Length: 328
Image (tube, rainbow, N blue to C red; front, side, top):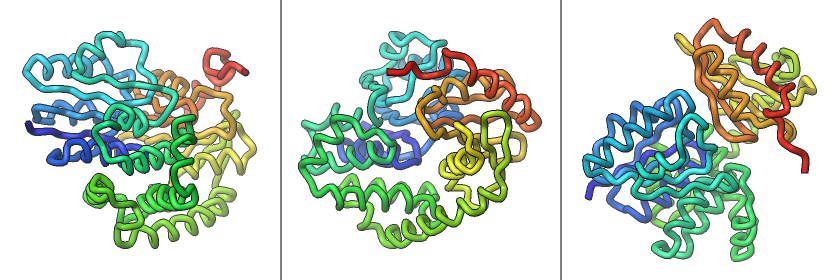
């Protein structure tokens, strides 16, 4: 049975891909993201398609579910593993029915979700990968904390830091390089086993500290948002967004990366007050863009020329209780 794995290209997504490949060792691995999942799923041919760590954005979700149903009716097994919130414009039951396997838990990482499902069919050591994915996604759940007791915590944090920081660098930012990392980890190897990745991670640490000095000079504000645009290193948009908030003493930070006809937006917050994925989804939707992610970390893509309108809407929504987390 031909198996294709579609996963995200960040730390959690790479770990998901490694767990899935460990379970289905003959599978092909491809990387995708929320804004391109519909297109990539449409183009994917396989008797079994594993989808992991890819948020369903609100704009495309109905068409994605429809496509899943069509593929399922044609004999393709859809296996879905994710932790991102399900958009409110699709029915959860419809999504479940479209999948041969549906495993979703918003309280942990996608790596934890897929590992929990297949753990009885995998070597015990593969739980390392689930731990890496959880830490990479800031999802240090009771599951992760319990599993950490089984191993030397210092070694595991070294490995996940090597992965998450190393893939920020150009040599490992390419999909081919990330696919190699997935293959090594699926066979029981660790991130530090990949030649050059440790050195890349160290370089990334140095660059991240240097980045804050750049952000302090470049960051500006828009209402309650610290903003920065066109940072030197594309892979550092998450830290840049957070540093923009820190440098300008704002609760939320954004980093913008301009493309030919759109702007990519990365969003972070300094506390856990806001439900960022809902803010991104709503504000981006107002300007015919798309947004989503997680409550703590989100992003979006908006048409060129709509940035100021997007920021105005985002600031307005931040004041509304429905976009703020309930205390306690």
